[in-house]
Amino acid sequence: MPTDIILAVFASSGFWAFVQFWITRNDGTKAELKSIATDVKRLYDKVDENAAVLARTHILRFDDELLNGIDHSQEYFHQQMDDIDTYEDYCRAHPTFRNSYTTIAAEHIKETYKSLLAKGEFRKEQ
Image (cartoon, rainbow, N blue to C red; front, top):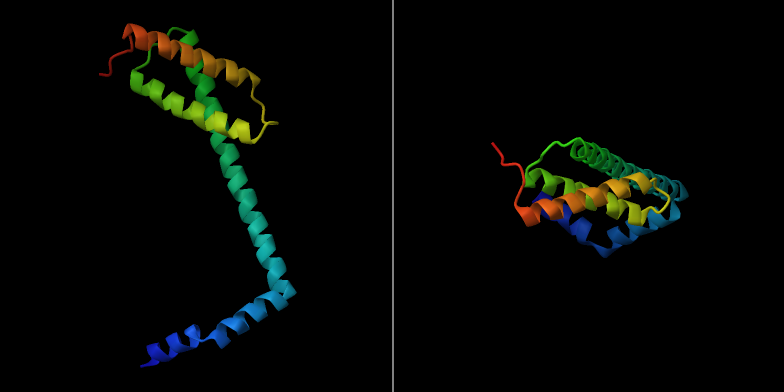
């Protein structure tokens, strides 16, 4: 069977030794792989930053609604708590990320949540 031959070639220690030799000796390949790894890392970092910016937008908008007397359901508060967690995790990992005004808004949301929870006064979902 051709499949058996292919498997035998791949399983052979000589084949893997050749692959390892080729990768470690080929500076161009090493440089390309390093460049790709750097690009992937930058992409992951940008995705994380975008998630934090989006969470910050949600937090600030929600706090503005609270300050303007708009009532929300408990489920909506839970979604905001998830955004706060996402945002705070990112800020801990990136101390230079702009944070001051969002921290105050997040604290206001948490305090409002605690107050509504104690009183059982969340808006009922329709």
